[in-house]
Amino acid sequence: MRPTDSAAASRFVPGVTAGASLDQVASDRMVEVCDLVKTFGKIRALDGVTFFAERGTVLGLLGPNGAGKSTLVRILTTLVRPDSGVARVAGLDVVADGQRLRSLIGLTGQSAAVDELLTGRENLELVGLWYHLPRREYRRRAQEILELLALGDAADRLVKTYSGGMRRRLDIGASMIADPPVLCLDEPTTGLDPRSRNELWRLVRERVGSGATVLLTTQYMEEAEHLADRIVVIDKGAVIADGTADQLKSRTGGATLEARVTKPSDLERAVAVLGDLSPTPPRSDVEQRQVSIPAGEGTDLLLDAGRRFQEARIPLDDLGLRRPTPDEVFLSLTAQPRGDAAPSSAEVTP
View 1 (cartoon, one colour):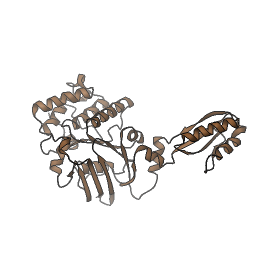
View 2 (cartoon, rainbow, N blue to C red):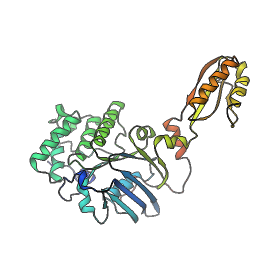
View 3 (cartoon, rainbow, N blue to C red):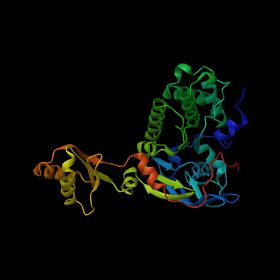
View 4 (cartoon, rainbow, N blue to C red):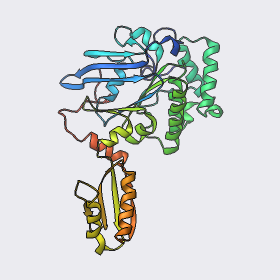
C-alpha cells in the first residue's frame, strides 16, 4: 500500500540520494531570502520578502492567516517557483538547484501527510525509500525516530488508530528520516492539545541541538517566543518586523509599572508619586484603583517606586512590572493595514 498522491506531494518531491551532512554545507546562513515576490493573479502573496536563518537555529515566521507564510515555505522547499527575487537553502538556489536541494530539506505541512492504512513504522520506512536511503539505514533511522517520538509501543499499529498528536509526531518524524540539515515546519502545532504541543516543542529543540536549522511558521507569538532564536513577522506578504522576542516586545512599548492602591482615596496621591518618576503622565483606572507608567526594562524603577510609596505611607494591594503578553505583541505588530491580504496555501492552488 502506498500513500495517497496528495500526501506524497506534500511530503517529498523525488530528487537525488539523501545523506548530505551539515559538514557538506559551507555557509553559516542556511536559509537566505532576498526580495522574493510571488503573485497569484491579482493577489501579491509575497511582496519583496528578505530575511536569513543561521545554521543550528530556529527562525520563526510569525503572521496571521493569509500572511504568505505557507507560500514562502512552498517556495523554499521547491514546490512553487517565485516570480522574482532570490532564495537559497543550504547554499543552493531553490530554482536552479532544486533537484540537489530536495535531499537536504525535511518538510512538515499544515496537515499530517501520513497514510492511515500503513503502520507508523511502514510510513517512516517508505519515506526513507523515497529518499533512496539503503534498506538497513532507513530501518535503523525509523526505529530511532519512533523511540525519539515516544511512538515505539505504537510502531506496528495502523496509523488510523493513532490520536491527532501521535499522527503529528509521526509526520514530523517522517520529515527527519533522512536527517536533513534544514527542517521546515508549517504551523505544526495547530489544533494540538497542550501536552502534544509541548512534546513537539521538545522534539524541535532536540533537532536543533543536533545542529539542524528549523524554519517554523506559526500564528502564535507564544510558540515563536518559546522556540525561535529570531522571529520574522510577515503580514500581507511583507516583512514588517525582524528580531528576537524581547526586541519585538520592546516595539510595543516595553514593560509597564503598575500600582494598585488599597484605598480609593489614595489614588490621586499614587498618581503624584508615579508622576515624579516618568516623563509620561501616569494612566489611572478608578474602578481598578490602579495607576501605571511606562517602565522600559525598569527593575530599578520598581524599587524606587516601592520606596516612594512607603515614604508617602500609601498602602498598596499590588506593585509590579507587567510585560506585554504574546497576544498583545502579535496584535500590535500586525495591526497596520497593507492593501490586499496574501492568500494561504489553502486559498490558492499554484
